[in-house]
Length: 466
Image 1: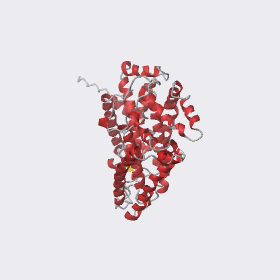
Image 2: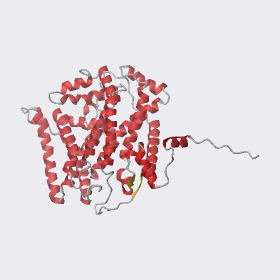
Image 3: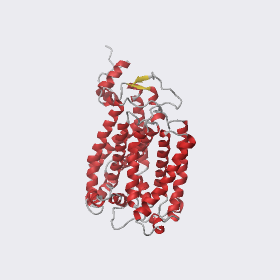
Image 4: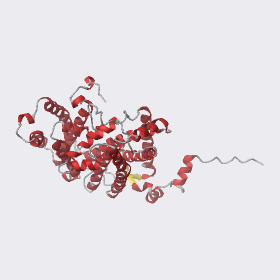
């Protein structure tokens, strides 16, 4: 009697696939469309997608990467929570314990740290991509507002997590960062003490930040992200990319989400996860000595994403630099969809050929003008000395702001007349100029500010004392 060959055990991947899709992936398009509609995980996708919207060079996968980073942060965060105590000085000792004695603890902490920082960059880039392709125009205005709110929450999550290691870097960065809150008119001091749990950063601050970091902020991000994905579908899916001279195709080519889109997303997620793991293995998350309120580093700097604001505080009255300018900027970002209503260029990078040229021009002017203004204000301009009898808010706040705003208004008018730029192209020009200027200020604060927050060339930077 012939002996039968035993059936091999299914692999782990095959067993997981069977549990997730017991009936298997349908072979025909109709079955795949039904699978998308019936699957909770895949319900964020339409049954079919336009092939052009899947182009890598259109979305760059930034929205999906943001979701992946949130998942990584959630998973690594849960592991870290189980080995962390939000109390000083035990918090610092727990970080040392995680790095030294918890299995893969240092790798997990590194992965959490770098994913959190990358999430800020990716979220900003995602909003930029939406802006330069006009993908926030009707009917997508609400989703733009949600995206901006999510960016603020992501920054809040990073800021509250920044303190948790309780080392010198974290303590003094949070001290500088939270000092900005005290400049809010009328309620600044009260609001600062409410967040800090006292007059200065201490044990209560650590507990407050920990509570916000693991509860309210993640829940808010998850809720808004879920609604954000739902709105993408509700608003007709992704915008369709096209060139500035292209007429919209009335019948764009469409393919089923499974497997055309899902396979790409899986490969993309695996590649980024591998890259993050490799980077986290090679580059440890920073950790300095335990926090010492009596020993301030020179200079004491805010977290890197607030260095642009800290740089503004060196040039303007605190109320103008910390409150008025950021408030105007945030309000302007929220209101962008209501200034830019032209639906014809939706999906066109930089609106038009002229828009591309104006974008390059705006970046070039900002790269030159911003450092010149910083140098002039650092070594030549002294509004307080020139106007000693004037209130500092006016002499060192409103007047410098007007001196900067007036040339920008005149430049916008010149752009309009010289290039015959329409409203959407002028909005693109101004927004690009201001964003580039803020990036330059951030880089100056990070790399060119040394002891006493004085300007130094990076290669001539004195040794920082901690």
